[in-house]
Length: 453
Ligand code: PLP
Image (cartoon, rainbow, N blue to C red; front, side, top):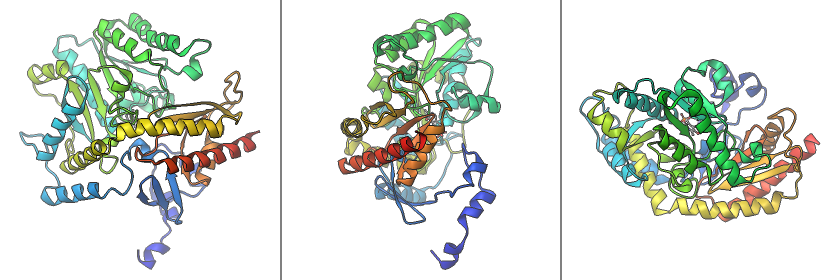
């Protein structure tokens, strides 16, 4: 880097010209924006030369860890051979064909058909458009309503935000007709006196009640993340998903699993659907499909829907310039090689056990810690004002933000959702790094406790 570059005021330029996603810009630029300049394994480096343990794998995506030369090579080789060609007009490229075939082989059941896009949001949008088109083609155009869940997150395009259950997003132009929401399977927050198994069935039956209210003839699909990530790592009891599947089948409603976070090993199996024992009609994938090294997403479509779209719909008027981008597909193929070769799903299952055991050992004595939960390498530490009654803090989100900032001060990236600290480290995290992560988390939570007491 030249001296001239070093002298450049990156902070001022960021404040002057860069609009950040999901940010309150005023408060963002009151502090110092942390500028990340490098990454290696589970570690980031910033422009101050500090090493930061990334317990969020970027944004839930860098499964294989930072600094994987193989992925760089795959990208460079494909760029040299063919940096771009589209897949619209009777053309295809080898990387996209190879990836579609590979995903069909990996995906559970009959999810044999892949449609590609660049982001999780676009994949969700695509799945919803496909669901409605499927019913239109089958002569049931009234079946339009999509049911999601409170605290669900399905991305930031308007359809995705409408399907998600984030009220703040709905208030900013993303509340659409023909979307409905049911309660989340959030046992710690909503389970009251029920045991988890009973609560799982209870939460799933909210779908049955919503169907009775709206009419199955008006409902296209139910969409849900196997584990609700951005909503606070809400892990459903084992009874939940099988019951949801039963209800969808009995009412002829398509089941869409949004695996943008759960896919590719995060939950300890290759897909969250496998962890929770369900077979969806469609599945959305993104993030860890390339470990975040290139933008890519996919919708995996089951035979029942695909056959209608392929044989009866005619042209499906939907697609993106970069659907099946050859460079992203080449990176995905190399990344899947790593995930399979290093058995990262099994590794996530084993490391997740160790992580939870260490978290309990380090944090159980802190009265502010209400629940430690996790499956594979996705988890949460829910902070509470009163552990016995599970009473939440008065101003939701304040304590979480304080804790997030203490994590930052300890060079640890964890994210706060309301007052719950969430984590999803790279799947390659080692045992010593788990210990390091837990020690930093304890320091941050203890400092939070001291500050809010
Ligand atoms: N679906 C889920 C479950 C997500 O967690 C996300 C992003 O976090 C999305 C969709 C949207 O993905 P993207 O930000 O790539 O559009």
